[in-house]
Length: 491
Ligand SMILES: Cc1ncc(COP(=O)(O)O)c(C=O)c1O
Image (cartoon, rainbow, N blue to C red; front, side, top):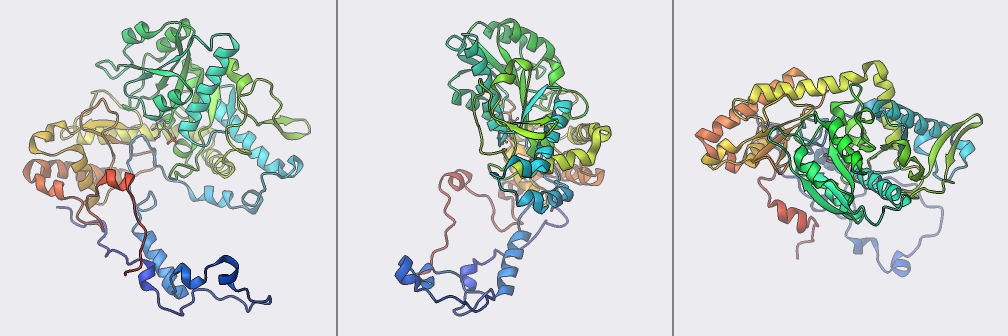
């Protein structure tokens, strides 16, 4: 058993149940305008709305207590593989909150937003240097959006060469993130799966067999979702190019390579980055993120607009590009995310950039080495920034990867990713990121080792987990498909 469960908090009562008629939580000055009869104007009074009536302190405590039962990177280790839940340095928030950025209106004349454009241009230039691509667009607002934008560029490219009608297939590895085939299908392509070989790499023979004049592109994640660097990447690119296709790099795993090696040098034609992973801007449910893309010269004419350009008179937004695919997001994309990414990049600096990927890779390999006797790697070779382990040996005790993950919650850790990539049985995918200390990694490994012992000796403890939280095991399908968190006044 863990020495100390993470938190034992009573389930909070909804604020509605703390309500008492006549209590007021804010102090407004006496109105100097005539009172309006809301019932007459909008057909409802304040009473009809059923708003909670609580004092200021009660409201403050309510929300502070709610915030304390949330689990985030600020409260603990968050090794959610593929998601790069890294620490978002506070200085990013300070710069993003500067009034000159935060209060900017997206329709201000260009002469009045030169500082903002300098930031966007600066991010573009730094991402060029990091990825090795000569052109960058900051317009897409999520990783999946970046993937789709790249495929739209690939489509425009083939159409410009009169091959739009024949190149109708996009190849995707069987280990790919679900957004890859979804992006291809969204662009009207049919998707063919390419198997992974016994070492965890692209099966080159299968790839060669699939390549013909119908292929528009191959989408490769490097390092792959298995946490492995694709050693044949140059050959993969050569083969696809020889068949007239383009190669897209899913760069969601760029945290393994930043400052160390550049996809633009590996032979790729385009890539997306997740600034909300690699460059420490916060994740949010569905955004706001930034799925910046990098492209080679051949795709540059089709880039979405606007592009930020530096001229002798200052910065300008370029919209008049005849072959562009158009806009993929309003205004400048997620501007404040760019401010955060800019801050992060400048704070690290060119010289220290490689520390990010080196430490991320070191941390993942450390975890893999410490727990491999209880959770062996799916492919037995050094990993990159995350390791994919298998819990299949515990199936004979009736224990699944999910049970191990749920038990980790009782030990005070956020669970890692489970059952992804789909090709690994009972997958546990751990991404520690670069910012965690050895003590934290050790505590996490100790917990995993202890849980695996429990799996053999007392599997029911795992089946019941988590028991230290407000809620236990949820029906996850129902929670997604049939979520109902409304409070209703008792009859
Ligand atoms: C490998 C990979 N590709 C693409 C994506 C999609 O990124 P986003 O969630 O920003 O759309 C993810 C997200 O987890 C990912 O892990």
